[in-house]
Image 1 (cartoon, rainbow, N blue to C red):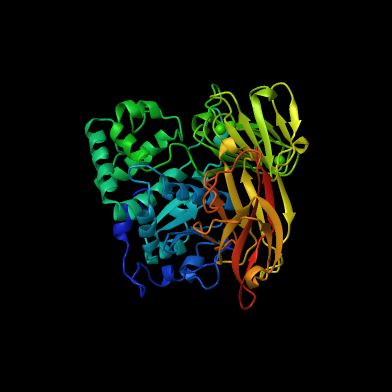
Image 2: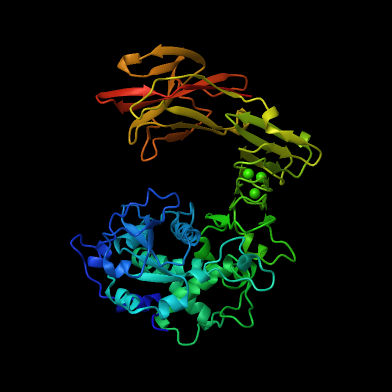
Length: 548
Ligand SMILES: [Ca+2]
Ligand SMILES: [Ca+2]
Ligand SMILES: [Ca+2]
């Protein structure tokens, strides 16, 4: 093995680290990757532009990145032969490793991890297989010798996508190495540089596990790398990435339950940093056919790992189905006809195109159905069953005794009034998301199609109206009567031209604040600043909701 592919700390110390003109680790190669625009690509993966250093483009073909909080990039360099879906999968897993886990001991704010990685221009390098990397042409050696930032490799044939035959095989499933290799990068250049308490806790847990004989490092592993391999191995066990054989493996505990009983130090670290269930999306490969399961099911080997997935999207165009688990989930269909069963927990169901069905485990009369602005809330009256789901772009709701067409439900919302075109050339829109049932206390306002980076806020009234150009605005106000202003919840249209507000329905700021009561109709608009070309303002149209 020419390169210490798994031994990331060895890679780091062998690199000629130096600061570039910006004071960050870099040099001609790394600097040539600054500010590559990935926004034009739907999946965020682009061809490397011609401005990139030849020693990089002699080896790599494509590129994507994750931006840290301060805008610094974590680079992904992709050799030909590794398909974009695998790169997107890898990027999602690193995003999961780096995403805040609210309320956790170490991970409630991981900005310091992200910023340390971005500051160092930490880089993932993707080759299709070991041959292309270890035995590649001299250009690979030239690149490895010259690249100025720390890097970690991941091989395409070790990236196992959900629904692929390597994933679903009952007899010879393959391990997805993505979690491990991406964790190494975050561990070495994010955690160890920015979170000394977590770094120390992992080292102590690793030493303890080695001393107790629970963890046996691979032969020849440098001592400095033991915490890296132990952290990654235990995370894989914790997520059931593969079914470990305790008699033949590095680690004596094979399941999350065994770890909780036997190695509480690392369990506290994992729970203190990583989400208990995956929060990254898993997109099923187009070849997958049938129903994808995410509950541990006897006789179906892949459910040992898929039971920790919550966000599953059906790829391709086949009439495939997904069954969720007892966690809050997000199930997304494809262009085919899909059956989506959220099961326990509050789930989001999106059928996408085709004729789709959301499936429930009880009779129709045990569920409340509420349609608002095109989205259905399905509320299970029975405890510990299907909870309360949000269903969108789905034609049928299937209960154990009957099916209900979502088109047969009455929409509690109505778009009743327009404003004028703003500087983007279109009219801004407003939508209401959630439930019109006051008992659910579930209402989000969303304003869209506004000029980028402009401020604004929402307004509400129980009375409709129409005021043309109030106060010199170029827009029209679709409210009358006593108007409540959510001016303390200032929104910014940002890069997407939209902002949203989770409404506290008990405190509508009508001076004095009032609660929304069943039977009331409320009207909502958003106001926002605009330049057209002189400073002005505009409004969205109006949407009303009859609350129940
Ligand atoms: Ca669920
Ligand atoms: Ca569909
Ligand atoms: Ca559910």
